[in-house]
Image 1 (cartoon, rainbow, N blue to C red):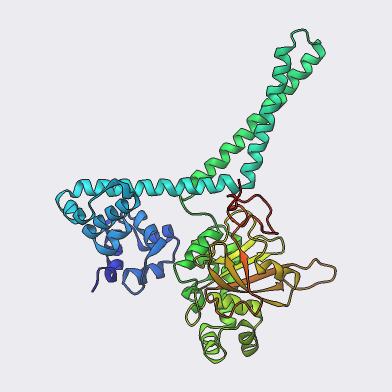
Image 2: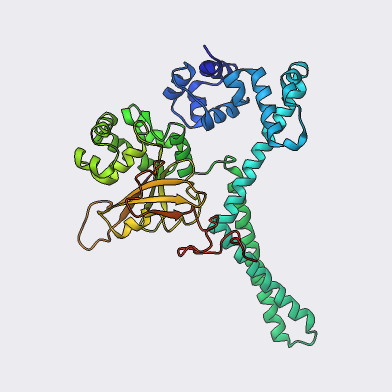
Length: 428
């Protein structure tokens, strides 16, 4: 049996040595105890973020669980050397170094892991500071209050013979603005304290669910089979997130409505076109789009984006090369937004990212909930993105899209909402 094949056994041994129960470890890393049991008995392959989370919880490195301690040290030091090529580290001698000086090798490996964790934390905090509207509002209020205090103080300091009534008025303004400044500063500190309590490199709710699905190839065997309660599973993955709970419940409902076996059979009969599949199966197109994103077997790699009528992302499944912004508005040229103005229609577009990746996209909007007299219509739009651009353009060519204006280099885009992050070629 290969080293990777007994990763589960190493996890079990390490967990037992640490005195952790299976249910406790499963809860800490956000999976069910039954799924961890399959992993520990080498009946499920494991890697990526989930393996990293388990390794951190058990106080070790992912490579040590995959390959054993010696190989793990060599792999860790190799990664560290490749990350800083200017160091001139002698890569062919790494195995000899770890064998002769295992203590120093472990120290270097631990330092590398610590640096990587700090980098992830700084990245998460930078992302939060750059895009979180609450932080931006607090910072704006702090600057406004500080400016007001400074202005009033300058007038008092520069006008020694000011009228006593005006002096009292300026002093009252300074007192009020200073109180506002203190309150806003406290709120800002509270925001940063909340950020510090988050896991480095991970976000809340929707991001946790996206990572969870990504580890399973954008498909959940637990929800497909009905072996797990979607409400309980959602609470394990993203505690307290109503959005993730609703997503998991709907996923389970639609898996029963259109089981994986029936979808696979239909794919063999009529191919992967969502309209053909909808007609063949008698299932609404938005449901077909969501089930295709979770299938991943007989179709090209795919992802999913769902938005509400306000443009907020409510669900997403990852597709490599097509990032969805965690904060702020997404690219207005995505067909998922166009579909909101055309409920009932199915939109097909060929998409080309600003970095040259060509994809196909299908989008459809639907009414959520039960219609009633005079009640506002609530819409949800679903977009399936596939890495199969061959016939996706539908005769209309490819639309160039980005992720969000904040990082998109297309300076001449008609949908741009803010300045491009870099100047276009040839500009001053």
